[in-house]
Amino acid sequence: MQIDMHYYGVYALARLAGLNPMAAKTIATASQYVDDSLTDKALDHDKSGAKMIPVETAHHMADLKNVDPNDQRYIWVPFHFLPGNQGKSFTERLVCRMDSDLAKAMKDHHMGFADRPFALELMGVTAHVYADTFAHYGFSGVSSRRNRVKSDDIEILEVSDKTKDYWEKKQPEFFKKYGNQGGFFENIKRALASSVAEMLSGALGHGAVLTYPDQPYLHWRFKYEKTGKEYSDRPTHEYDRHNLNDYLTACRVLYDMFRAFGGLRSDYCNINSPIDFTAELEENLTGILALEDGDKARSAAWRDAVRDNKLYHGEDIPEYDQAAWDKDRDGFPKILNPDDATKFSVFRFYQAASLHQHYVLRELLPAHGLVAI
Image 1 (cartoon, rainbow, N blue to C red):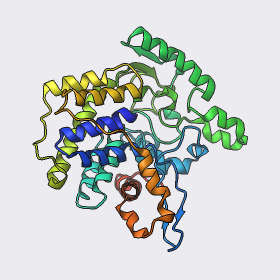
Image 2: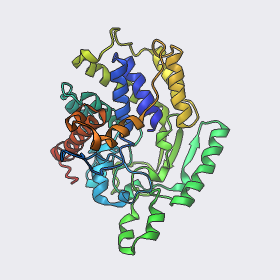
Image 3: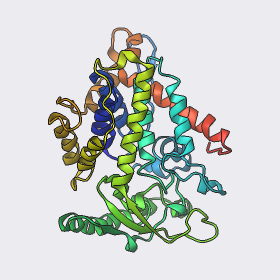
Image 4: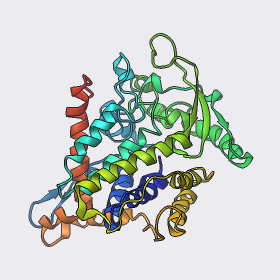
């Protein structure tokens, strides 16, 4: 998913669920910041000896860290491709599954921290990871042959001619630039020794299908490269993906999660009651998700729908402000009292991300027989 869903959609759904504007903005910012927290460079306070070490939750596409199998398990597995634990082999169980039992267990665990100072930021991290299971399912957060698809057999279905032309041009340009399985692997192979390149024969995440899973309106079809007895989770060669249906289900799941959170933290709730998830609301959400355009236009569609009273009473969704959190992080060395950093949302995001990462990798997965690190 992209910023239209991770920030603007999350904000609107949190408000629909009865949370107040401040709570919704913090949750939504944390949700999108999972894609934007790209550094773990330590910051030393100028005078006290205090130190802030950010938690890295994503990488740029061409970052060499992406090919590090250990780093993949610390970043992509817990934050973007939560394992579904279905199947027999280890690599099969690492594959992300939509709304899996592990995703529900993660949600329930994190809800238990609703009384903590970083509760809103943790809800944002949870929203990001949970929502991604509705887009990233069928792929895993490690380099694996399971992620390989037949690039010549990817089809775009039931879209306008303009949209189809765009993706038909985009696909060969992407594969020519980056290679046809892992996004950036072909370029990196040229730069590394052959022994290391062998490690890259698998594909990471859904790079082999570009950003198709991240487009809410898209109906598309693809074929995995690997099928057969050792891939028991793939009874057929061809798979249809109706992103719109999956995203609409994700909206309902996030709405329910935010309502449950509001039941635990009435101080973060609006004076007005939550708005029920009616058929009319679902129809209006479908209209937003069905927009065939880029993430900027889709983000604007969320803002317009809220402003025009199509989801709830009209208001302006505040713009996503990554710079404000980055500024608080970068200003840490010079703040008068380093203890004040605990009041920053960005610091609380690091608390939430650290808790989530530890829980998933050291508790949740091992409890189900998955030792990823």
